[in-house]
Image (cartoon, rainbow, N blue to C red; front, side, top):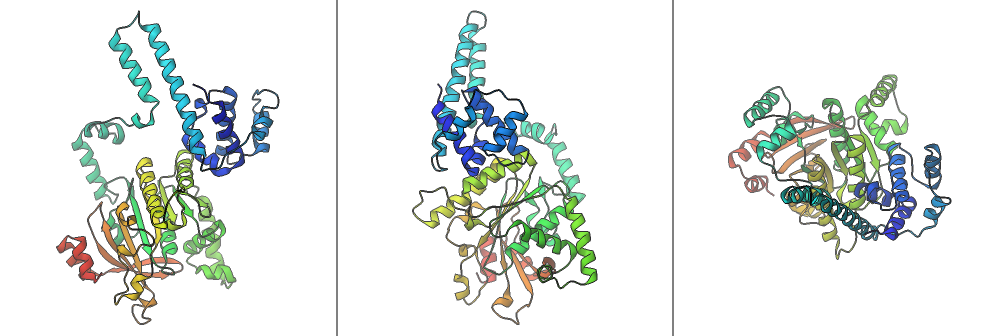
Length: 460
């Protein structure tokens, strides 16, 4: 019921590899270690990460000394010298440690029950055993509940009538009827309602269409309109400086290329100074840029941000930059596993996940180049996993005289609201501005009340 070998591999791997540490912090707790000294060290890892520092031999030694943590002589040195494993083998040692921990808890529960046999009734002992044993199994953490219990416990309303009344009043006052965050675009919100908690939102477009710019426009809107929104922007294409420069340009109403070439007017400089002060005062959003992470790394990082920083909305740029955990026979299966991983993290943490995705170039060979859901690159199930699919299209890329400077945003799947349509946007100062709905499309789509009819009408 103890596995000190697994504990040693886990501690040394966390010290050696940052992505191993992130994964272990999301899956383990210090009480799971049988060796109390190992549990103390793992707790030190968590405290160091929480303080914003990097875990290494130097920071660990400093943390132990500063907090006067008593460990045997050369214990930290032994951890540093212990063999470590790669990320691929880490789940094996984590499963071993968790299995040993569960057996120890079961043994303790049974030993306690034996001591109570003479003093308590069998029904009481059995109930206590079931509660304690189920409590250590993560599969039993979510108990079955009635709709009344969910409303009372999670939303704070004793009856369904009071819950509905409160939601209707919130909707009338301009707030989303369901838990989530509005996009800040009036026409888009009329279609999708809001980015609902637990939903996976997919924004697809071909190269140079404006996926990243659209996502940064959404981020700016969320920070401006939704005071309770604490977003995480997860980028695999741009570094922190470039994202910050674009956000400053959007806030200052200055083209971001001016920030690069320095061709600024006096008014631009004043606007940029004001924008920098405003962005500096916004402490509620985070930027994470990691090159080609695995889906497990992405999930671990998201869990950390949600747990330690209160993040409640995720934007990911972009899907096919995320790698699977290995063992896939094709890129197609790998991308499918990534999309399912994003769907599961949205549901598990109950936060909206907005993910950008690249489209293939097949539509450019068609007579009508507008993209469809079948154009997602290297996958056939991405659109199935998503609750809402939004496609971007720039007609002037194919015909310079066709709506120059206009980007069409089309909602082609909307499981949560069952509304479809196309909205036109104009790019100004690095930010998308809404222009108009394509009224005929909206009218006919609503009358048909069918996604397939909507596709047929648009010539998909």
